[in-house]
Amino acid sequence: MSPEVPPALAAVLDGRTPAGVLPWPADRPVADALAAAEDAGWSAAALDLGGVADKAGFLDRCAAALDFPAYFGHNWDALADCLTDLSWCPPARGRLLVVTDWQGYAGAAPEDWSVFEQVLADAVGYWRDTDTGLSVIMAGGRGRQGT
Image 1: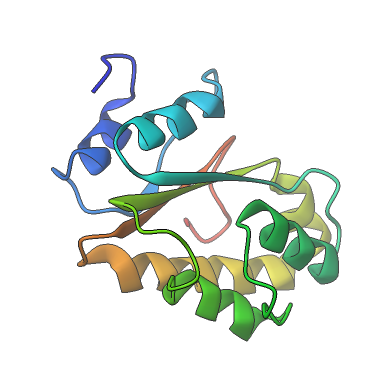
Image 2 (image 1 turned 45 degrees about the vertical axis):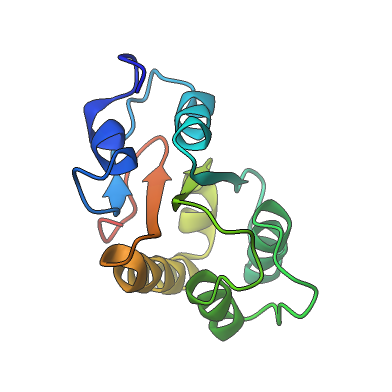
């Protein structure tokens, strides 16, 4: 593991700490997190929510960024299903999702953002005690409910 990887991420990637929601230094490019995950044999994806103002746009952005299968239903249940049943994606030691520029969407659609936080927390919890953890970085700050 490269010494420049923040300790919280390094501990998750090498298995010393269970996967979960991780802090990320505001002054560090998220590309560093994505590269560190890939170097450790994890799959990594960036979900950029810049300019997203509604649920439809949010779910479209998720589908594209995470390369969801064609059968993705573009609703909250389908999002939860795709995050907990990963039979559609290649195997990996773990999965890292880096969410960027999320504050605008969280402010524009707070009820939908709250649903997403719960879906994400449930997915992280689902994978926590498995050999293939899911970790999330909320770049630039934390969600309203701490996810």
